[in-house]
Amino acid sequence: MSTDEAELLNLEWMAPMDRAQALMDHGEFERALKCIREVLFLDPDNIIAWSCMSSVLEELGRPEEAMAACERAISLLPEDGWNYVDPLEQKVWLLKRFGEPGNVTALVDNILGTMGQSSEWWRRWGARLRENGEYAQAIRLYDRALCVEPSNGDAIDSKVEAFRSLGKMVELWVFLDDCVARFPGDAMLRFHRGQLLFEFGLYSEAEKDLWEAVFLDSEDARARKYLGLAIWRLGRRGEALALLWEAARQAPYDCELWSDIGLLLMETDQTTRKVEAFFYLNKALRMNPDSVRALSNMVQALTKTGHLKEAGEITSRIGELTRQNRTGTMTQEGMPQ
Image (tube, rainbow, N blue to C red; front, side, top):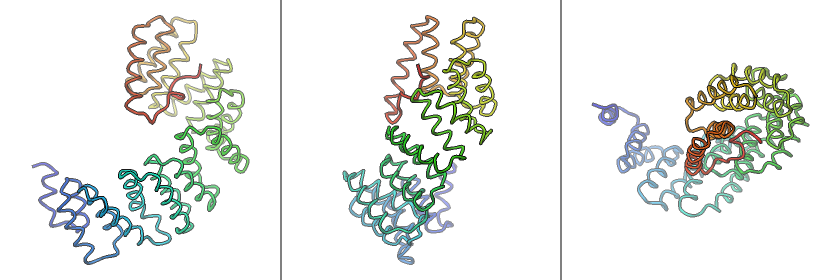
């Protein structure tokens, strides 16, 4: 007997909401709905039950009833209810799925005007919006979190990622400049700005922030990695490789880092170094065969050594991967030229 079958046979021993969730997990939505109704009969203000009912009704193809259940769950949220993110996320999903994505903005407007002052609530709901691809709306929630708690590192980090997802690099630059001015001793902020300056090709400026990030947090392998890459672009190969080896020691499972080391070794004139370069490039691809960055670096290495057929085959593979994942961008996947 499989684990799934055993779970279904023991439903009667479960608490009602656990039973409903188990039935939902097995696609038994009609039975799950019956369990949820039993819960609501005894506890009509159960937020989790109303949220689960909305999900079940959606799966059963009853969108209007699903939205009504979702609205009921939201109406029951307490003012400090940041622990109850599910009904809000469910409404975002319903609005997008049933052709009303523009109303997501109105929903956020309403929440901004009615909910309490918990920076953690704002950050966590912002994270759910970002997971649903609502990056601009997520930024509004992160802004509210930062109004309440300007030093909330998680909110700052999440806002940075939301800006990146939107491709708003200039706005990100302005935001990071403001944050660094207010919190000059924050290693994470120094790293983010250094990384951004590196991506803009401003390697000398990036070096300053990245050195500061490494000084403030010596265990941050990302900062040491980008510092090494910036210094390499400034022509100081020995110093760059020392930093990259140290970063690899700190983050031995970072396939992109090994790939970068391989590509950088490829730029030397020594034949033995080129052999070593392919060792690290292949190591990176063994760790993650679908890494677009590692594949792009391999294409560059093969092209440099005249293996054009192999480079073309990998280029086709990159095309397949990017078509499968349209949310990714090619601007950061290969080494800067």
